[in-house]
Amino acid sequence: MRATTSAAVLAATALLTAGFATEASATAQATCPAGRICLYTGENATGRMASFEWGSPDLRGQGVDRAIWVISNHKRGMCLFPGYNYTGDSSGIGETVSRGFRVTPVSSLKPCTG
Image 1 (cartoon, rainbow, N blue to C red):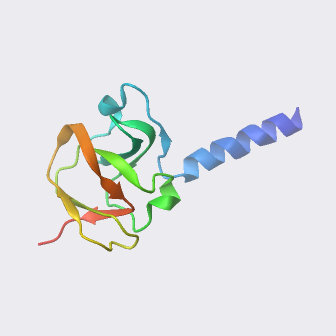
Image 2 (spheres, one colour):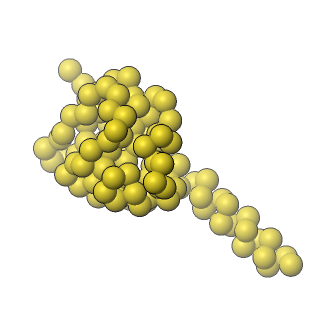
C-alpha cells in the first residue's frame, strides 16, 4: 500500500512540475485558459499541451519541444522561435486566435517587443 501511495504522489508531483503540460483532448481548443498561449505537439490541438503567460526559453522543460499547433487566448503578441533561447527566425502571433493553426516547430517563445 505504501509503495502505491508513494508512486501516486510522485506521479502527481511530476505533473505539477511539468509547467501545465497535459495530454490534449478533442476539446483542447476550448481548454486554452484566458490570458495564455497554448502549444500542442500534434495537429489540431492534439498530443501534449502546455500553456504560457510569459513564454519559455526552452520548451523541453514543459514537454512540448518542437510544438506544431498553437491557440492564443493572449491579449498581446507572442513570438515563436524554432531554436532554444529565442534563436532563429521568429513567427509572430497576434492577439486571440481561438481556433488554432499549424506553425513551424517551436522550441522557445516570448512576448514580442517593439
